[in-house]
Image 1 (cartoon, helix red, strand yellow):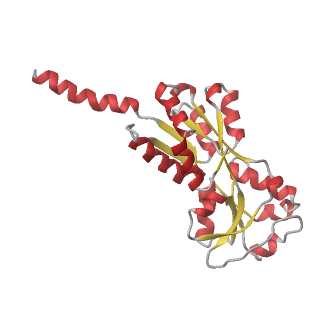
Image 2 (cartoon, helix red, strand yellow):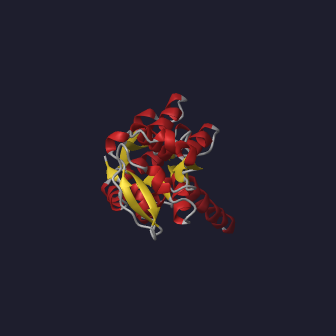
Image 3 (tube, one colour):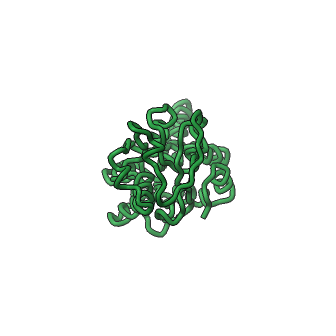
Length: 249
């Protein structure tokens, strides 16, 4: 009898661990997904195991076999990347969120500018200043930033003055610390920081729409993973995303 009770005690945590889900999410989703994880736990599920980084970094980790149940990208490109390699469950893919692309500056040096063709961004940066952005070669926020700067005719002059960050939150941190006089991030990133202020918003037509596709990863496809994706599209999670400043699609 004692052996049976001991075995049951051991099995309970193992069963709980078996139901835990791992989510890889774009860095810009950090605060919102932590809030959603708390709601998921309140609903009686184990807390989510979450990893936040650039969508490109996370997609490549999934490609290399990282154990993941759900992937949330900050652009279509990196979800497409995994889809082309047959690593996501295609019929679970959903575009859940949108966002704004904004120019931020340190909060103690407030300025408001109108961003458009002819905008003198170099003057704003100063003689030795750099523009903090996610690396445009692979980070979604940086890719959107490059699109916008090219559309507005600013890229050629600004490109030599970029401070390329590993993800959008790292770029935000450079501005918060005063290491860069300005940066390009998402509106939701600016909203969670007391160290920066939004100087201007990039026109929507200057870049591809900022889109966040979510999908179940094929290697982590379980009923619980699908239940989580359903939860992410439900009213509780949607309210969190709206509160955090995302556009709910």
